[in-house]
Image (cartoon, rainbow, N blue to C red; front, side):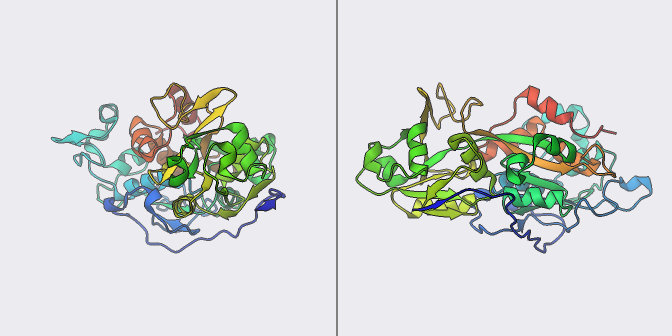
Amino acid sequence: MTADTGKSGVSRRKFLVTSGVVGAAGLAGCSNAANDDSGGSGGDSGGDSGGSGDTATDAPEDSGGSSPQPVTAEGSSTVYPIANSGSSYWNSNPPSDDGEYWGENSEGSVPGWDELASDGADAMRLADYFASLYGFEPTEQFATPPFSTRVGLSHSGTGCEAVVDGLVDIGNSSGPITAELGWSESEADERVVDHVLGRDGQPVVVSSNIYDAGVTQLTGEEVRGIYQGDITNWNEVGGPDQPIYVIGRAEGSGTDTAFRLNMLGDADAPMDVDTRFGQNQQVAQAVQQNDGAIAYMALAFTGPQVQPIGINFDGTLYEPDRDAENTIFDSAYPLNRDLHQYTTITDETPSGTDRREGAFMNMFLTTFGQEVFVESNNYIPLPTADIESELAKLPDQS
């Protein structure tokens, strides 16, 4: 294994903006991004480029100004399944009698529909409704929202840099921007607004042959020993006589930052790994293809061939089972982490979040958004008190 010494300052990955088609990703394209093995930087859900540095971003169309620019987001592959599925629904702008993606019909309704319908959503398309809360005119057209949204796929550090540099409106990150960019808390408070969409009970996973051999749990000390090069064979932790193939995420990814911070005690802690991958999808594939592997990743990308294991921290076993007494889905789980969307504080937007961004983010903070975009992607919905705190960060509704 090759030791690395952690990040030194900001990871300056080149930000890639790929060309894309504006408008709707069809509802057939609303699949979980965990099934997308592209793994490369810059994948997106469609839409024009145009970040927060552009003009005509915030004005509703009935205000006499220009049409609003698309909302653009970039960053974390962990946040991507939530943001991208939400973007696909938004751009499709389905009608209120759809019943599957939005609204209700004789066959059923979406989660939280009674609450939404009582607030006026019962006669409106999805994006039309959420945008109208912030003063935007409904289009009343399928696949034509009041403004489109676009979500790019890269890394948390890239997303944080992109939003700070004005290249996009929203920076998606699975690690805190303070750790990603080396900022102090006071600098972050002065420059960005931290919006939390949900949480990830970051699992440790092993290849199926190791799981089947009986390694279904490890202690926190054993995981640290593996990632610091002190434990190198599975027989040292009750497994078969086989070298441990240690997989890490790329430096600059929020998953890597959060793992070092929460497991090793420092965002820049040195690690001893055999290989690193830039995306959660690539990590999942590597675990499937390599016997004897161990990795850390996002919950959304686990499965039968990528088995999450229990971890015992100081006598408490946290299991990958929602019904367990102590579970990795609990906020008390030491690797539990917030999933962030950052917006920037500027002279034009001193509150840090404009009405386009507020309309889009508000969708995720409803019962509908938490169940459809957060929980269905195997992440952890926010408790009510946290949702109320997040809603308070958004602009006032019209």
